[in-house]
Amino acid sequence: MTSARITSVPNYPIPPVHLVRDDGKEVSLADEIDDGRPVVLNFIFTTCSSICPLMSQTFAQFDRQLGAERSRVHLVSISVDPEEDTPARLHEYARKFHAGPEWQHYTGTVEASLAAQRAFNVWRGDKMSHTPVTLLRAAPGRPWVRIDGFVTPSELVHLYREQLESAQTVATR
Image (cartoon, rainbow, N blue to C red; front, side, top):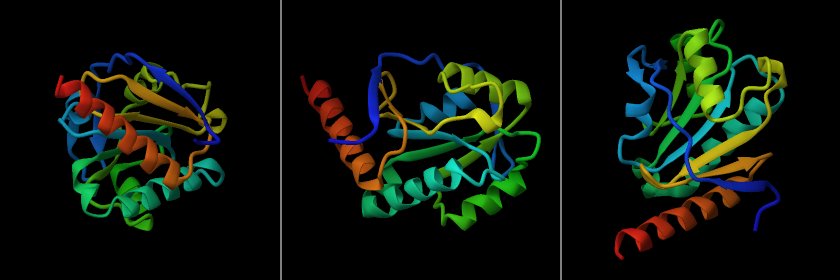
């Protein structure tokens, strides 16, 4: 199905941290992730010149491929470099990738960023050591799908729809 290594993970406890969205609003990470929509999440930083632009381009193409469905999903990009990535810098970065209202970028304190990275098992010692990881969850309370490595937009759309279908099947039983 995909060239990426996929691991289903039953539960990632969301840490009780507050982050700052690219619109400057301070928000609870748990409230943002559990807003009722499916979530596709990654970790990036704006000065990255290697994997982050590719992961963000994948999100942008995924978003475009969803078409009218895009408003029903929440794309979440959390900075691993909160000291540099201010809300204004994240806002500009989001504009570069034509992020719509369904795709938010988050920063915050170093402690909050580290707590989020550790909660999702993506902390690798420093920003330069981070690896491409995409996390997908069809609905609050559903298991996460962890994709280690790069995923194409088409593969991500396929996995997203597969997870939605699975969640709907469970909900109708």
